[in-house]
Length: 69
Image 1: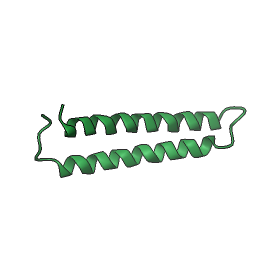
Image 2: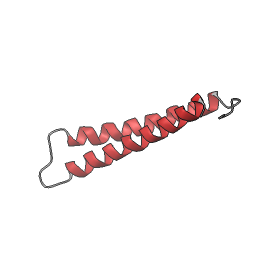
Image 3: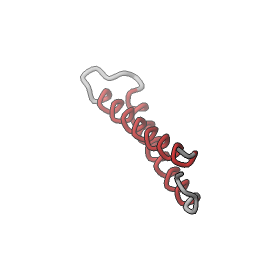
Image 4: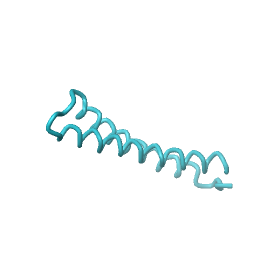
């Protein structure tokens, strides 16, 4: 596995985990007993997920000519 392929895989997994933390935070905020920072966790996770996707798109455009092998 090349460094480019590992990087794409790692950023994809990281963005999925960020979205998961974001949804978890929002759901905890909407529960009957919300924690003090659940909304911040949710919004921050969703923003981090969007940022990672934007980063991955820019990375793929930059390394368009390189192979995954």
